[in-house]
Length: 123
Image (cartoon, rainbow, N blue to C red; front, side, top):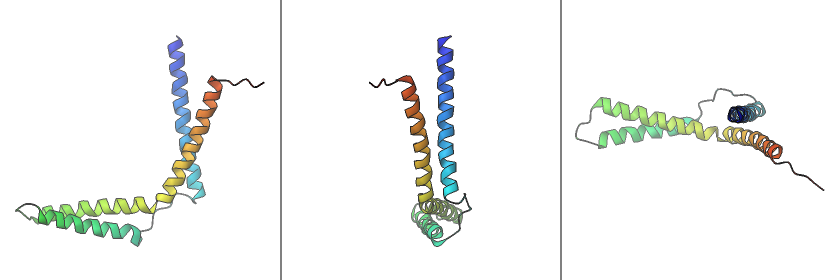
């Protein structure tokens, strides 16, 4: 019976940690003015173009067969990877504040739980 209580307590603690992390992310979103759709700027499109170019070069330089399907697939894969990296780089400030807010809330919750389990008697 004690194991069931401990398991329930740990489950509630894990759920509280997840909630605290999500609250930190939501508060970072509010500070940033909401989660708006990213604008397609040069910062996102330039890496996509470079990635597509690298994909085309790598597909056309490898192997004896240079089919258009392979070159198109290389272009799409390189472009998608470059675009993803460009968006990640462009949203790094929001990501940093979201992670810091989540960690701050989770560390506060962890400290409170530690103090609850290990009370400190002053004096």
